[in-house]
Image (cartoon, rainbow, N blue to C red; front, side):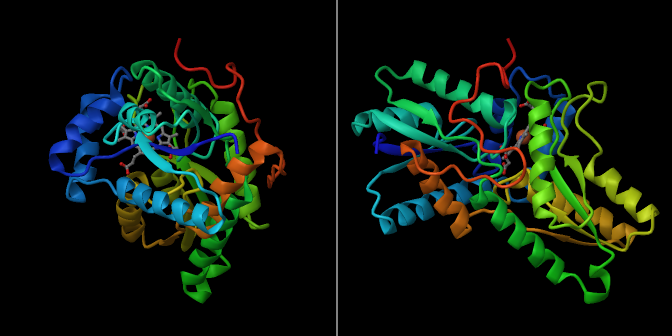
Length: 327
Ligand SMILES: CC1=C(CCC(=O)O)c2cc3nc(cc4[nH]c(cc5[nH]c(cc1n2)c(C)c5CCC(=O)O)c(CCC(=O)O)c4C)C(CCC(=O)O)=C3C
Ligand SMILES: [Fe+2]
């Protein structure tokens, strides 16, 4: 084992009402998100008492990874750091250094390629390391959108969502995959879209399906990936659909974008339309997803690199050109 720690690297989220605005300002600094959008997203967090579910989910994931390492005889400490909120990555690196960690592998809670999911985390690592003299070296583990540990829980959760539909609605239910929208001009967008389509085809298990986007945040003048999930639900309702299974294929846990934009907003819309929807769970702390983290670590020492779908495993280190950030 060439690493002496695992770093769980995530987005971060507010833990109470006073954190909401400072958190949103961290997320959107320099990104041209309109103030009105920030204020409406703040309301999503206030709807849940000002706390994002993502921190609890990361604490649970960290505990599950620790238990899985222990059960697998892997004696490696696990640390957790975020891009946008406490525990901030630089503080975590300071702690790792104090504990004598010299080289760590990073597992990021985003499964896909593209600037927001991948390159931005590499930039976060560079920036945080530059802040901490003598910081450990950090290798980001490969992108895992098509690893069976991510895809198989998605398949199981999709089947379970079908099973929750009334039997008479199952056969006619539309299968709708959803992912976070990004600006059309975002570096790596083509690869992000290709990967989403590749996994959707596997998870659909032969059913017809469609891929839509959610949680768009830029000004209307800037094109983002579409169609939007809400517009799409209205369209399939107009087409005569009675039910749909919604699979948040773009996300690894049931955080705010899932809990609000799907379980509140899309659910309200579907209720108004009289469209029955069931939302599939995300991998979260599914045992296969947790075990994948250990597999990704061990494959660095030459074991198999499993991948489902047609695209094949991504390389360990992505080329600087594949989803370059803003210059
Ligand atoms: C592709 C993608 C993922 C999926 C991959 C992954 O899962 O990582 C993702 C995840 C997440 N996005 C999250 C939250 C937010 N994203 C925002 C804004 C943005 N997201 C973007 C992209 C993505 N984001 C983009 C291009 C922007 C515009 C600003 C910019 O160019 O960066 C904003 C600002 C307000 C708004 O405009 O919505 C918030 C609050 C949370 C935490 C939720 C919680 O608290 O539970 C998570 C996991
Ligand atoms: Fe986001």
